[in-house]
Every structure is written in structure tokens, then in C-alpha cells.
Amino acid sequence: MNYSFEVFIFTSFIFLLAAFIHGSIGFGFPLVATPLLALFTDLQTAIVLTLIPTLLVNVISIISEGNIFLAVRRHLSLALFAMLGSAIGTQILLFANSDFFKVLLGVIILIYLLIDRIKLKLSWIKEYPKFSKFIFGISAGLIGGLTNVMAPVLIIYSLESKHSKSDTVQAANFCFLLGKIIQIFLFTINGAFTLNDLSTSSIMLLVTSLALYVGIAVKKKIQLRVYQKILRALLFTLAAVLLIQVSV
Image (cartoon, rainbow, N blue to C red; front, side, top):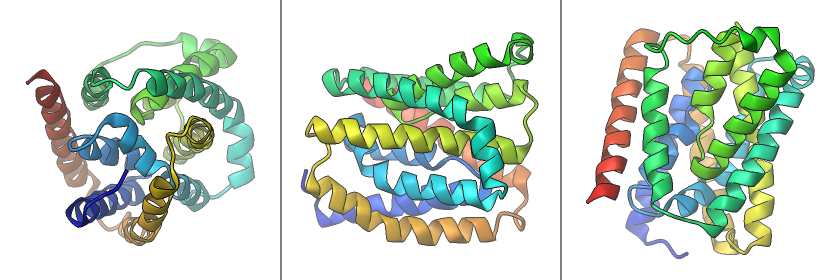
């Protein structure tokens, strides 16, 4: 797909915003970038454009929290299940690239925004840790493959598992990292990830790197409560626009 100069500039701005948000709170790159990109393209193209920058964002986020090998050992099984789910979701997206998935993305964002208000009691997650990793890993991967967003599922899992902030950030990024790797493979062998897409996505690495660095640098300097309110307002607007866009 060829991109006009105006689209290229708009895409660059989206990647700047999404990477800054991700750097400052530890996750959020695909959660912000995907619905914004999906406003002017189909969901599959939006996901393809984020593939390469997402790998960078995930790796840096995991490293920035420290104790890398411990994190890998702790979250490997969850990430492998997410990888399997992502493979299934990506295959569905490849053969049924529908506006329905934009609706699904909008609904998932709204669920994410309601997580704090939903008082879930999922005691079985701690009682059956292996089973819960399988259920939440597959679910997160499947939804991630279809919509590029795993955060709501993984945040629910982390909250009920009483994970620390660092564990939550590393688990989410590790799951997404493996999910993106399998997506790149599947998109490539199915001809959905072209050299032009690769070059455009790769060029965005510079923009993403800069914004991610700034976001990480200011992580401890911004008032989290105010920042979260702004982010939630942005996400709610994006979800509403996606749902309205598909319905008209």
C-alpha cells in the first residue's frame, strides 16, 4: 500500500503519541495507535503498520523494568499461550478482514476503561494458576491477533494475580512481543506484509524510539492521576468514533 505525504505525517504523529504514552506508563502503544490508524484505514493495515515499532517498544519496556531473565522465566508460559492465541486471531483476521473487528476493538477499549469499576471476583485465577495462564494467555492472544489490543485481558489477569506494577508491565510486553513475532511471520507468508509496509513501519522506528525515550524519562515527573484521566478521555473518544464510524 502506498501512502501520501499527508498520511505519512499523520501516521508519524500517531506513533509519537502512542510511544510517548507507552513509555510513560509501561503499556498502551497498540491500544492508542491501532484505533487512531483504523480511523483512516482498515484494521489489518493498522496492525501491519505497527508491527516493527511494537517489537522495539516491547523489548525496551521489558528491559527498562530490570530483572529480565527472571521476568522471562516467570511469564514465559503465559506469553507462549498468548502467541498461540495470536496465531489463531491473525489467521481469522487474514481471511475475514471485516469492519466487525473495528467494532470489537471499540468494545474492548470500553471494557478496558471499565476495569476499575468492575469489581470482579475471580478467585480461581490464584487457585488454578496453570489453568488461568492458559485461559488468559489464549484469550489475550486471540483478541490481540484480531484487534492488536491485549491489555484489558492481561490487566484483569494481573490484578487478580496480585502482580506488581513491574510484573504487569513485563508480562504484557512479553506476551505482545511473542504475539507480534508470530503475526509478522503469518502476515509475511500470506503476502499481507509487503516490502513497502516493511519500509514504512521501519521508518517509524525513529519516531517511536524518540517518543518512547521521552516518555520513559518523564515517567516519574508527571502526576499519574491527571495523566490517566487524559488517557482515559482519549481512549473513550477513540472507541466512540470507531463505533460511530462503522455504524454510519
